[in-house]
Amino acid sequence: MASDIPVPLQLTQLTKADFEDDNLPVVNQYLTSIVNAHNALAGHTGDVTLAGNLNLNGKTIKNVAAPVGPGDVVTKSAADSTYGAAVVGPQLEVSGKYSLKTVRRLNDTTQREKNSTYLNDLMNTTPTANDATLSATHVSGGVCVVTVSAGSLVRMDDSTVAFPERSDTLFVPTLITLLTLNRLSGVVTATSSAPHGLIRGETFSIPTATDVTFVGSFVVSTVSSPTQFTFFQAGPDDPSGTGGTASVGGVYYYYLAANAFVLSLEGPFPADTWVNRQSVNTDGNVQVAVVVLTSSGFNIAQSSAGGTSPAATNGRLFGRL
Amino acid sequence: MALRFDKVKINGTTGHMEVHVRYVEKNGDNVTFGVMKSHGISPTALQEKFNGDTQLWLASIHKEMKERHKAMKPQHDTISKLVGTTVEF
Image 1: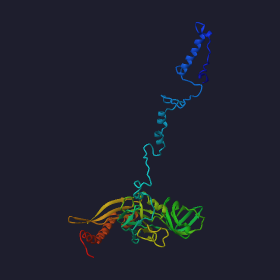
Image 2: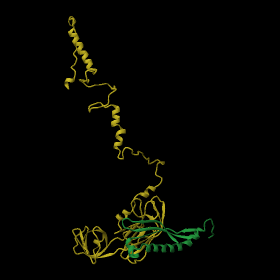
Image 3: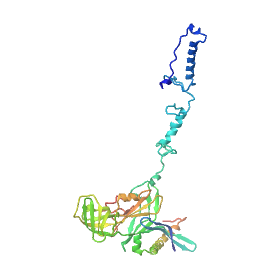
């Protein structure tokens, strides 16, 4: 690259003798060097190469072509179309090129939220405000009829929706008598007095047990025999635990779906847990009542609706629904 | 006398059946609709109580809705006649 840099033009002091030759060789040689230097600076011989920096003293360079190579000057138009805010902005938007850009001024009374209806679509957990009551028939033929009375529900935005009465004929869960419950390294082996009928992966609950540490809701891990199955439960080893009872299903949730005015039913669940309640209270569904059936029928102590206060002995429900 | 089925639902997971019905009373050209109620039944309960016969279940619903309508109709009639009247208490 050094060879492209023009050699500095030396000032030549001409003398009278330089003009005495008819061909004026010295003069012509000097003029030739000046002309060549001028043509080189004008770009007639190719790219103009400077030996030093170009200082325009604040002036602009005009009519520059669009950059091609990596070392080319970037013009304003090229910079705008390649790196400008209009180009880079959409690439920084998570929602893409056509995202809606707006702001809400929180203190602006004309822009303030004027109702809370949007809250109706949010997931919520009980308690909710409704005035339904629960009733049920005695167990007959292995079933009982549960009735949720007509009532009204106050939604999150304080609007009220009335719903009609609903009755369901439900199968009462069979109680499995467990002779022994043995826990070893977090695996519990249960032995029943009669064929339990459970299958691997089935959810069940142990409502009563001699050793209360076995009480809870579980999933069948393995079925060793028609009268023996295992499940996982963390806890200290208890190789000589006595028995209890196991039950499948029995918990039902009544709810109003978003924008609905007729009760829906979900169940049976093996136990009334917050996880199960939340699985029902999604997508705008609002729980209205919990019904717990045991082998002896409707369990009023563990069931509740908005107009039915839970029994004093019920430690599983948290106030009115 | 008939039952009007406003809606029927079958749970795709549990098979729980559900009907939304109202009692229909026809008297000449007059048709009176009773108050709506939902009835549901689990497949196991249907088998245990009605031997799997859906018609028996629907018949039991019809019977209940009819009695319910008969019990409530006088009250509804009393209320319905109040439109435009002034009653001293």
